[in-house]
Length: 225
View 1 (cartoon, rainbow, N blue to C red):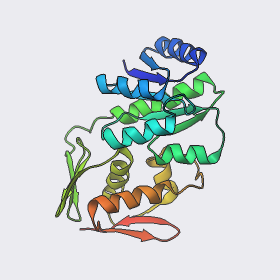
View 2 (view 1 turned 45 degrees about the horizontal axis):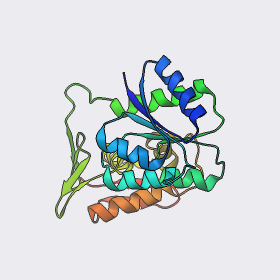
View 3 (view 1 turned 90 degrees about the vertical axis):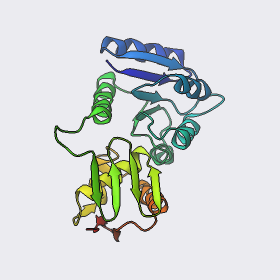
């Protein structure tokens, strides 16, 4: 059984989601604004967060930013919002959300997305699989999301970790942007944002000069031996 945090200032939404998720076998805790959610996350662990954007005191985007700053092992966040501007989706994804679901939503579709991200977050390594990936002077710890090498030893965010692990596993191959959006961000289409480029810039800042080549207009290639 997983524990989910529902963050929304509309009691009817919280009540509906709680009933539905409990019926699916999950444990649910809730917060009615962003500050309450951050306080709760400081006291207990949850497996996934359903987060509204427009709330008093601290909105959803601010919650995502604060989590990115202070929670390197933060749980996946699915944004639920009636805001339909593309810019809101882009900002939420840029700040670490794994998915964005438009209100009103179909409960069955939302549950499918919840299952997908819970499975992805909890997926264990296969028996016998090494805990580390080592290539190009980088040692990536799959359990701690930590990358180390000459001059750096850093904890990565979920997206940074996913992007680097994907490229290192595909060493020597060109990974297209649409492939990265699908496999790392869970997007079936390119929303026209630069989330991949922003994540890559953060990686390069943390790792110095990693052996990752930009294939202009196509994607990236990890070429380190």
